[in-house]
Length: 85
Image (tube, rainbow, N blue to C red):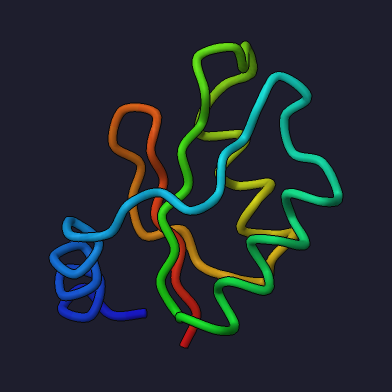
């Protein structure tokens, strides 16, 4: 994805509310499945990683991107944005 498109998606993501939450168990099959379904449906999804998760945030975001066949757009704090073309 080119830089211009990433900037555009970041702008759109600012208005989104998180619709997928990653809890204490981290990336589970159900979380990955839900993210996959939402990315297919809406093309842009915001994921909130709860404070109870002790694993590295970047590692969790990369795992989610791989599991859902989507692209990680950005991580800001404990929130990650994923997109699929």
